[in-house]
Length: 284
Image (tube, rainbow, N blue to C red; front, top):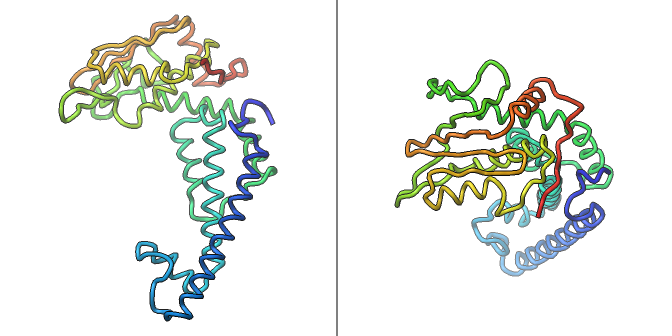
């Protein structure tokens, strides 16, 4: 498997931990079931012996020995969490748009059975994602462009281009900054991923490394707003992004870079290109 998508922990170690977790969970449930049966025979079957009332469904299933249902629920829950951890740990997740990431999370938490957490399934899943990485990255860029366009309730923000996927030198994002109840401002919730995407895209096209927290764009911008600054400029060797925010919640973003760079990003968003492979290097 390509190094591009190897997670923090090795696949072998994760699969081993998954199998161990499944084994211990089954042993624990068997023990609980044995305790339930023992208490039921001693005290009567009409009482809740093992689980408090908040866990009524699990208690009911154990009380009436519906073992397969209980084991299946726990087994699937463990699998979902291992798949989610693997996805979050892989670099392919950083290339996805918020919408695509949400689809993966929905898959991880769906009620139906999820694929077994095996070497074969992991390889098939992530190899497929890796082969689609350019299309995934293009969708991420299109999602970012849609976010930068004017909202229906703010049609006067004509700096944002609507006809095609095009990044002008300046855009206005509404409802990006909110006010604390006790004074001061903060970045609207769930926008950190948008600023992470913005940084990743410019780093991908310039070949610069992404910075880790607390030096990354999202953290620096959030700290600047929390500290009462009215403006902040994120500066790298090949590009810069300036931000200025206002009490009405608007955030003005200006891209300080060559028009050639903006045109290259625009072209990829509209047509894709084999020339650009998204970078994933991260600086310390």
